[in-house]
Amino acid sequence: MLTVCRFLPKMAKLGSLVVVSGDEARYSIGLFSAPKEGGVIKTPEELVDEGHPLLYKPFDYYKFVDFTSTDVGRASPDPLKEYCGA
Image 1 (tube, rainbow, N blue to C red):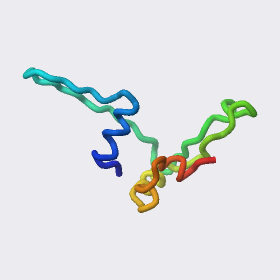
Image 2 (image 1 turned 90 degrees about the horizontal axis):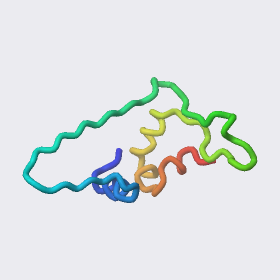
Image 3 (image 1 turned 135 degrees about the vertical axis):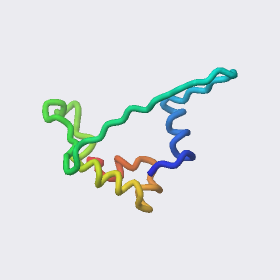
Image 4 (image 1 turned 90 degrees about the vertical axis):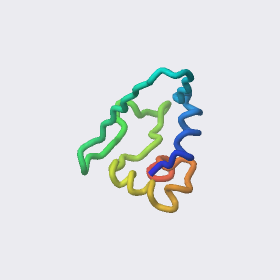
């Protein structure tokens, strides 16, 4: 699981970190989705060719989430690539 210390720097790199000032209340809502248990995430075959090689092997989302809690997953700068990089 990502900790705040690891999460915020990654968000800042993506340009998604918002800082506000003032005394007005600000409300935010997070919307998330996840695949059904046992579902495999994979790149559609029509998107992979010689000019656009496969970057990640198909993977089970929940097994990947479990991997991010291991010592190797937490230590990796790119857990997805570490887990299922092609």
